Image 1 (cartoon, one colour):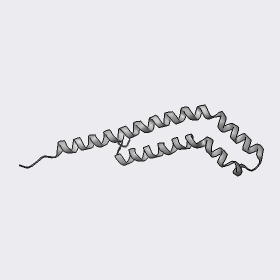
Image 2 (tube, rainbow, N blue to C red):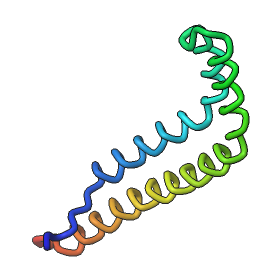
Image 3 (cartoon, one colour):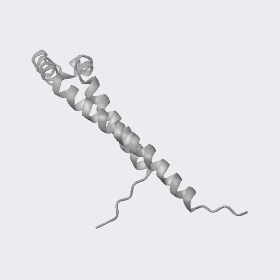
Image 4 (tube, rainbow, N blue to C red):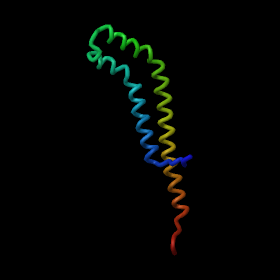
Length: 96
């Protein structure tokens, strides 16, 4: 079993990806109207619109959960950076 390696860059990358996922959930309704031409046939576009509208409550809950997780990852990145700095400071000795 390998060791868990955590770094600020991994946490920041995870946070950015979670932010992008949340953005996808938050803008799904808007994109349906913008992408209506992509679906071509009117019945298909209508079905996609219905699907997005039916998912609005679930999307909201998922978006909130992803946003909460993203904030926790951001907080972890800050705490990790502070911990690393405190450990570095504690190991550094000053010469008099």
